[in-house]
Length: 126
Image (cartoon, rainbow, N blue to C red; front, top):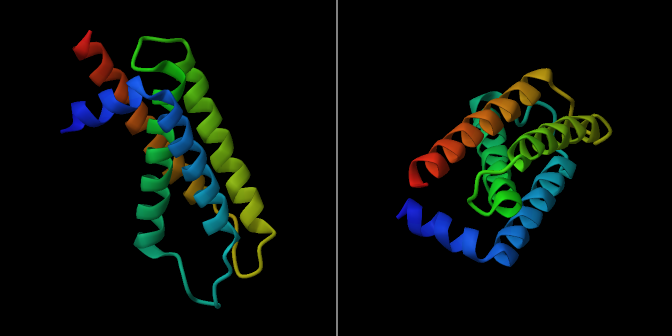
């Protein structure tokens, strides 16, 4: 199932780019939402950050590399980490939200684990 999914998006890069852009927009939109005091946070926040940035990384990796070995893998990782940092800075200016170094760490963990898994998958396939 996973290989079919990845093969589809690697062969249809327009769809992959579309999903990448939609995920980036959704992350920005969710970061723009305000919460009442005391709402948000906790382990669900960590799950959201890890998952959202894992998906963003996966689709950016597919979009830039197309399933082939590429030097663009490092670029994908750096772009998503930078996007995660910018997202936290953005949250600093949203009422009811705050920036968190822990969120940046969780984002980065999701980015790195997804990148390693995708690169391993591509290496085994070739």
